[in-house]
Length: 142
Image 1 (tube, helix red, strand yellow):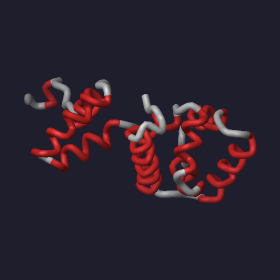
Image 2: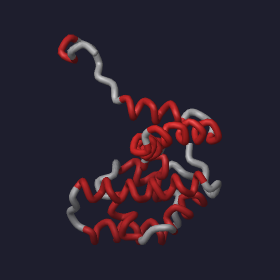
Image 3: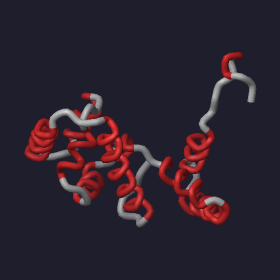
């Protein structure tokens, strides 16, 4: 690839591959990932991880979101929401009961300042759990 200084774009191949895989139906996606896993298990794990993002979890319908939330202590979910864009947080709270939304906001406030790495780790745990639920047919991630 040419030097990026020359105006060429640098492409993240794993991210692009994950986006391509995400666009496939689950049967084809799994078949491709299984073939990759035979040759390179680490790459297959990275591609699986890149299939879904935390924002997709937040976009779930209320009932599906509840199933994801039930799989984690409220403190972990609150940590994952630290520093979240106010519009995304508002949208999330609209899917919760008023009591749940208030409790979640109180939990977020009680955490105090957090390292970005801790927030990202919490988001990854929740996203991974949502991916497992998706693969088991419990929820539908888009």
